[in-house]
Amino acid sequence: LDGESSECIPFDASESQMKVAIEGFEGVEGVDIVLSAAPDEAQFPYEYKIMFQGNYAYGEWPALQVKPSHFGAAGCDSFVGGLGHTAAILPIRDESLCLDGADTTVAIVIDSLTPVGGTFSVSYGQDSSVEVSLDASTSDVKEVLSQLMGSNVQVTRHDHDDMSEGIAWAVTYPGTSNKHDQLRIVDTFVTGRNAKVNAYPILTIETYSRENDSSGDFRILLDGELTAPLSYQASQKKILQEMHRLNGIGKVNMLGPVDGQELSSLEVNALIADSFTAQGLKAIALVGDLTSTFAPADRLMIGTCELEIKSIYHEDYDETQSAGNIYESLYLSSPESANAKAVGYSIMQIKPSDGTLNFLTDCSQGDGVSETIRIGSVLNTDHGVDHSMILKSYTADIDAIEIIPERNWRGTAPRIFFKPPSGLSPHTFTMAGIDAEKVTIRASARNSQGLGPFSNPLVISPSSTVPSAPTSVLLY
Image (tube, rainbow, N blue to C red; front, side):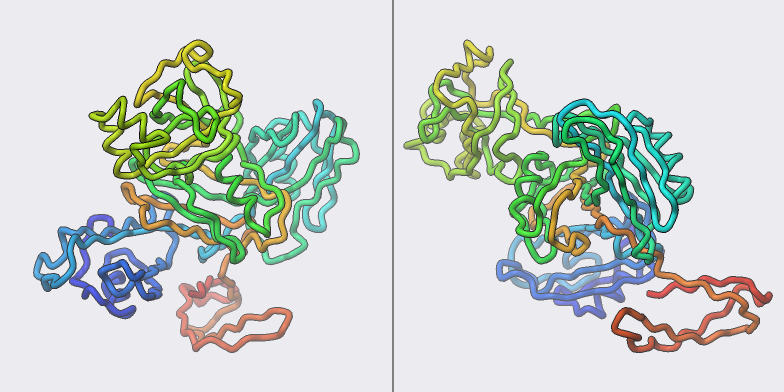
């Protein structure tokens, strides 16, 4: 853990054995361990979900590693049986579990078919509303919202292209247990064709690795529904495609870049041959399975042409037909052909696909086995990709979300950060007026059904015994 090694851990360690090993690291406040059976293909009997207690800054939270070179080494018992032992570490940060609570994230979105104008009003909780001009700057919007919600509000302005004209302000503010503390919008005085202003929840998902070298796939589990695998650098179209396949999701848009930033496209190498068609349509081929990365309607830049993906699918290598025949007959000795034999290739059918497009004459792009092209749109960060999205229509419980890395997840301490839209108030309470050297308390949860069972007794020693001096108590 961050350069420190644990004691020897048995290959079939129990929950308690794993807990003792992890809590032996300096600086670990505590962990919870959940043991489950490993998949049939694994050489180890169990896999472990390790939940760290405590507040680690984003990007600096524990980088747990298991090095195969340490198996049966440094005084540990040697491994017996099996071959090529490895360990996969799949780190996730779920901010909804943080003891200090979690912020609420919403987008104030302006949509219109024509240029917009006028003002809209915003209210929060029981406070009166304030007016906001549609040409207001980010600092102006933050100042207005700070009047309603306090100084801890954060605001950023983003591009938004759901309709012809659009603006989105992402608003982050401390979570609260009061269900009435919600942003409300009235857009009566907004001008523009079909113009509207609404507040929608934002689902935050980001990939991160220290060296920005993540690879592999993950899935989104939302209210019991699971997406297909998504690449760490999946295009925005691919993210939207998978989200819209969920029954509980009606409409989703990507958040888009902050003002002054731009979306990036992914640079890849492709087999290009003007004569190549797939199922009668103009097509190109890329080595490997890229169906978790790109989707139909993704933008495709080939030479000087801006085109569009009509469909994408993966095939195993077949030297007698499709792209396999081109690899085999024209580029047999190339590294790309060797790789295609091992992992297959992805076929991209292209719009327009009526047969009139010629890559050489129309796009200034010649044939080749590894030609550079650009595909899709992604929002890159310094250490990964931001997949955050605006949830406009849904029936799912959007706070019931998990991110599940696939077993091919790799990189330098690769991580996935996600945060449900609804904030949470801190899991703390304050006791005032303590004048004893020690206090014993028991806690109980309460909801609409009544009180739950009491906790075990907890003995605390206040840092000060001066009357009315508050002492915070953290519940784990």
